[in-house]
Image (cartoon, rainbow, N blue to C red; front, side):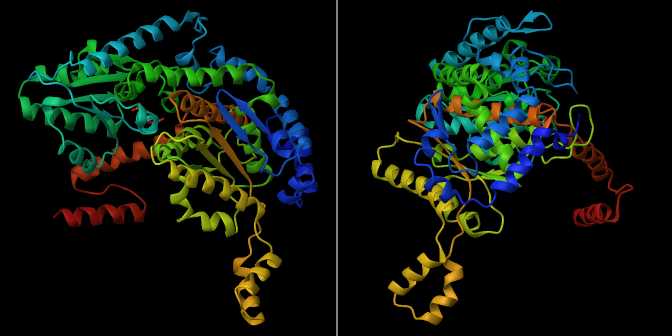
Length: 546
Ligand code: F6P
């Protein structure tokens, strides 16, 4: 049966939702003093409190039936076994092999991929240590002081997020920068602060054809050669990470300076591969391996734990409950850690590019909602921007709060305030404030009856708004690795339950094709055949160029 919503488990959940929807979260807590311990779980150094969601043990049982009907356990096993779950591109999905510390082989098409992974990791270590120790030098003999990662999407967002998150582990020897946008402003502003003699470019592109990356890489090459006027300089100042080593060579990068990734590494899941070279350059190979280790611990937990004792599965099922039955159309990701400021943007690609689909694995339209909009901002900044709407807007938005209990910063007083705000926000979203409570407060403030009746509606909060809280002791490389793997697996589980291919991204292709047509018309000076809006926009463009 293709139609998820026709399944008995889906119908049972629908029924359960209509029977339980009027119960306020406050009542769930009131009626069960053990609720926090019943609806929280610990794994791989992370703690997930999901008790502030509209669910009961019965809800989880219904969701487990849905998971079983979707053959979730078998599909998880298929994922780790290298089955070709990306069925539109006929590819395995094996980012887990990149952090496999089990010493067990992992096969794709009958071949163990582990030796190739180890060999690339070995070469990454050699490069990173050589740059840090000053063995690798610029063409004029100077030490490398700045690394520029040129890539976009999965070749940018993951590494950029991790480098920021692990800023406490950053080495002194180099600064790592990221350039992704085809808007020349980003590259030219970055280059204006750098010297060609001391800069190493890491060009990261799985395909090595991506317009933004290739345009930036070509401009970076010109900038370098304007400084040196000798093509031989490229060998000292460019390295590449790609699955398309032929194109890397054609670009002029020495094959000895190229790092391979494989078609079974999806772009948005690739930070664990050589795509993470800039991470390793920023924090050292040992810290990079600690990141992999943390992810591996989460993989072990995910592949081995029963469904309802499995953190990524729980996070996914709670998300399905909120998305498909509570009808929440977006999820706010709210890290209370400045170092995680890039985490919402990273997760946006990982989740929305994976699960923003409207056909099932066989290409038939699906009748249930898939990926919600993922968005967010670091904690207290968001409080002074959009939290008003989270608390009193007409659309309840489930939120994921993320916080480390111990600070790595010497301003300890700040951390207390940070944690207090994080905990207070999830409490406020859930508890709300009744009209009676507001009236008492307003009376205490000395307001008269007329003023009270005018203000009471404005100051009342319904509460009853769901959230998860993810805790870690400290934001270490291991904890970060586990956190990223947690969300990666959550996304895969949701894809399995929605019966979609989470590992392709056909939806990004049309815009790329049309841009190629329009760029030719821009070059040719005349708009071609378009709708009147696109034609009008192009005409205005041409007018301004004259
Ligand atoms: O935007 C689509 C996409 O293919 C992403 O999936 C990918 O992460 C990004 O472009 C970059 O691709 P590449 O690494 O091939 O340059």
